[in-house]
Image 1 (tube, rainbow, N blue to C red):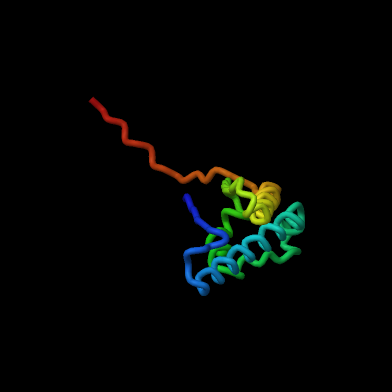
Image 2 (cartoon, rainbow, N blue to C red; image 1 turned 60 degrees about the horizontal axis):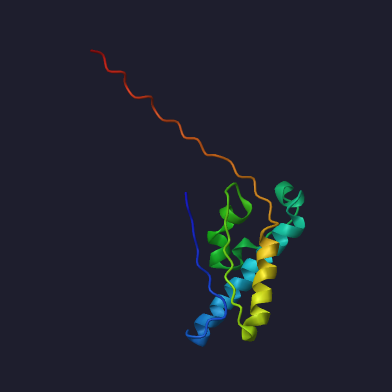
Length: 120
């Protein structure tokens, strides 16, 4: 199963309510990634640490991808514009942190019936 999500930071063309919702989701995603990085080695697998997946819809949607048994790809886009240096640095810190999340990818195998052998 393939899941994808597009999360956009620093929205300029959206209404303030929508911008606040996007920023809340980005904050929740950052908190989940931080929690997976700091506690992911042993305690998350053993269930001794709480990861706040329910903090937003995006983290609930990506729960299996972030800390589950799948391979994940996160693309961070940045700009060379000096006016966006702070946001670029923040995005790069997030990407660096996200790259340290440990997942346990595995191949899901489903049983498929063997095709019937045709007899001539």
